[in-house]
Image (cartoon, rainbow, N blue to C red):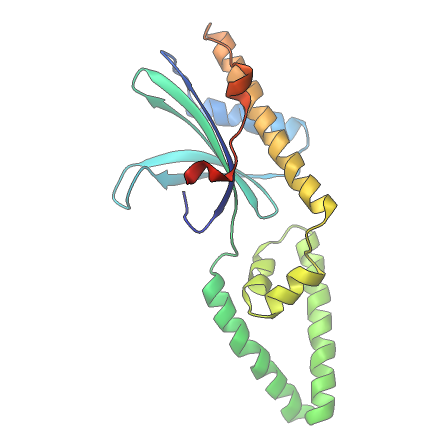
Length: 217
């Protein structure tokens, strides 16, 4: 688990004297979400079991905007456990982007002033910045989060961007909740199907509930 990510919730279940294929588990989750046309992205990642020299575990990652589900299925002795972690990731390479932005903005302003004079250069710089922001916004609406990472990481600019272009709204919160419920419901459906197919005990109501962000404290 990357310590820089903000963990939102977690779920797990351990099935005794049970075994299955993690890849088939992941493929079934992907197929179910794709059939539901969920607006998510999939990838497979590896997390260390402990320190940097420890063995690695393969996880299925499901992404929506900046939220990520890391889903795992793995044996533990004669038992098998299923789990997922929902987290909000920070902008990638935030410090590098922030430093680059701090250098690029005054450099760009200086170039405009040198070319057009102080007043006109400032006005042209504001117009150019607005046009660039509009173009970047269009790209981000098409699903590009890399560009947004750059903007969010720039001091002051990132704060203003979040305030005016990425505020917390009813819709944004509802979308995150829908993402969590869709993936959690899909994981439960696949797990219960696997358990039933091998005659294992079904999940109790308490075992289907996720835990909040205090799970790591």
